[in-house]
Image 1 (tube, rainbow, N blue to C red):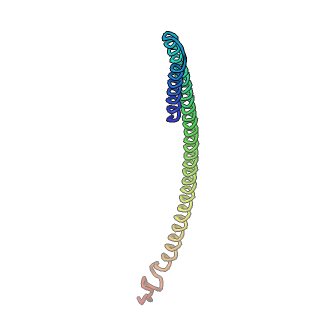
Image 2 (cartoon, one colour):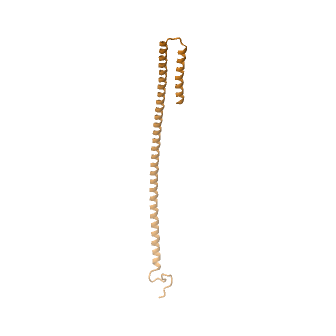
Image 3 (tube, rainbow, N blue to C red):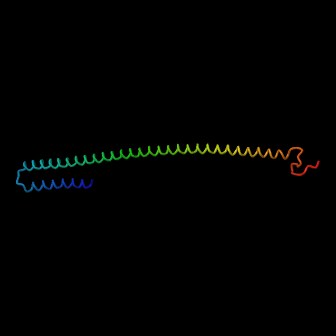
Length: 147
């Protein structure tokens, strides 16, 4: 942008210097000289105005391109976010399914262990109950009954 300002200043300065030199070396009347000055100043103004208009158009184009890029990036970010959320939801569902599966397996194994423990207890009661029946030859401490 500073290069553009320098160019504009140079354009104006060059135009003014050229107009002044033309006035000094041209054998014209005052009226002709004033008309030349008006004409030259209009030309310089028109050139500067055209240059300024061109710069405004370029700036507007750059701003529009920036807005388009920002919108594109926002859309891409939204798409990535939706994708990440979907993946997270999928992983959560898989985790829940795995937990349910493992929970079911654990309950089944627990039931098996409880059944085995109950069988062992029942078997122990049967065996223990046979040895401790009244009238058996040994007592509770394993000594002979002397009665």
